[in-house]
Image (cartoon, rainbow, N blue to C red; front, top):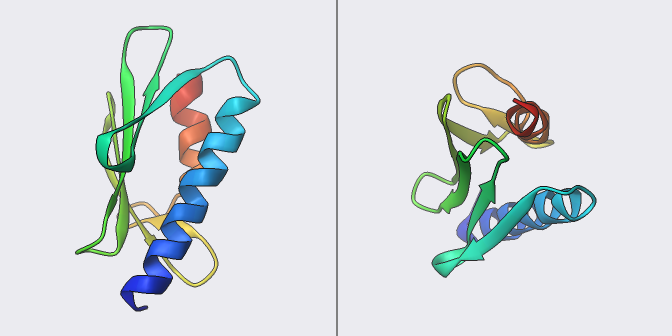
Length: 94
């Protein structure tokens, strides 16, 4: 995948995350550089950002750091294989 395709796919994924968050009562903000910060009720945060050099989306949460890579149809965790939106739904419920 080239840089342009990566940017389009990653931007679409972040826009979908924002749309899903808009339908909840979860607070979030877009920080400088397009970093998405989700504030949870327990005071913790989830931080999501694009990592262009690795062509990945990275998620930092209380439970750890996760790297998601596009497999042609979805953003999957590079270690466990969990899909990005599934993981975020789980992380925001915790």
